[in-house]
Image (cartoon, rainbow, N blue to C red; front, side):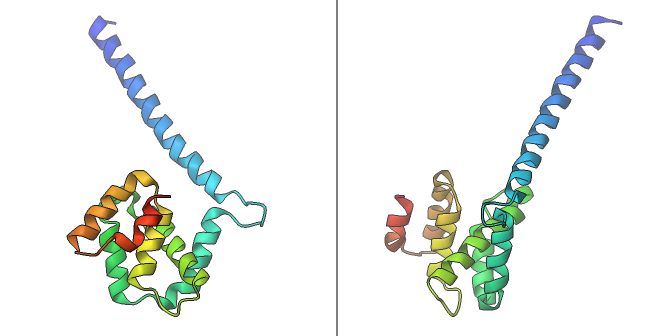
Length: 142
């Protein structure tokens, strides 16, 4: 076996082990989110519960706004992010006893559902849509 071929094989092994590790990490995270909590429901079960309870409250304009807000998320993760954010929006709507999903509820739920490092993308998107972020500043500062 020549030195170049052996180096190729070792490089290929490193690439495959790395890719399998990354895939395993994301599979393990999904597994943990499916594990039931103390109340018997998992994080994903609660997301689905809030989405189902508030599905009738969503109008096409609000769905379009959510689509636009999650557009910076890479397409591979967009559906997962949208479910997490929509679940949190539903939770906010239920806690506030809203009769419909409004722009304020969407933005509040989005802020609460996403980590701080992603807020800059939301702020940029809201500025593009000329939506004042001043009322939401306390949520960003959490």
